[in-house]
Figure 1 (tube, helix red, strand yellow):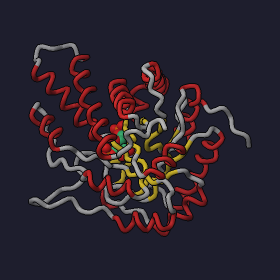
Figure 2 (spheres, rainbow, N blue to C red; figure 1 turned 60 degrees about the vertical axis):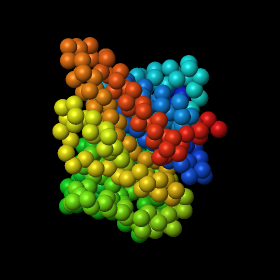
Figure 3 (spheres, helix red, strand yellow; figure 1 turned 90 degrees about the horizontal axis):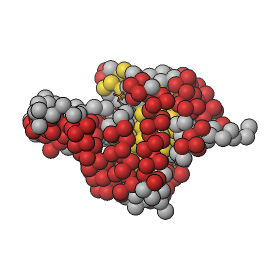
Length: 331
Ligand code: G3H
Ligand code: 13P
Ligand code: ZN
């Protein structure tokens, strides 16, 4: 069947296929940064423009619910126009994060997303394959790229609850069948990361456990350079947590994935690095600091500007120093 003109083309988004192929070839990671508000979107886009990195904006079902689909897509599209007006030509993708249903994926495709994740990881293998295949079939008609998940992350994913007890790593023996039967374009894997700010409960001075590197290597042996996705990849910077806690927050036992684990993952087959928590902590902390230091302020644009600057700094740092995507935005 011929390809229909993609709704995302009107907003000059691109799908993630070229982004991931280049990341694989040059061994860098593409940060997939979650956004809900214009402040987050602007922080991410302006940082990616500054570092000349590909921009992958991820919107969860709750981000869509918070804005309404039209406002979400329109604000992102307007923010992309702004960086274009400033001369940036970096590729920008708009991606659905943790889509739980075929209908939501379809709604996002029609609304102008260039990439969708169908998260059927709670289903059994057969059910996951069937639903993923259904999404791929329709997405391909629109040139939209599709991510699926095999294995379960511990913790609570967006509207996809997975009890810690159920949590299980990706089974490498399933990956070839899954990719062959679904035609999916990228695969999220579970190798020991989890969502949120508490990824590990250390007992006195205990180091963060190794990720299941043997599983990653086994998957790579089977799939070659097929693009893999690491969810729950925030590093939870202790300095950001300290600011958050110093100005009224109470984030206890906050521990993220060590930066050198992320570096190791992107030297292998991981091309997409999902990051939400780090921007939340930095943004909320900066907001609270501004408000505590300016207690009479009722103009919340001011603390929001401080939050935007803090989130922007996080993205610049990650693109430059961790994901090594800087300089790869426009070839
Ligand atoms: O993986 C989940 C993301 O961090 C999105 O979180 O549902 O609160 O927007 P959210
Ligand atoms: P973090 O909670 O580690 O930022 O992970 C975000 C994520 O995986 C979004 O899909
Ligand atoms: Zn996730």
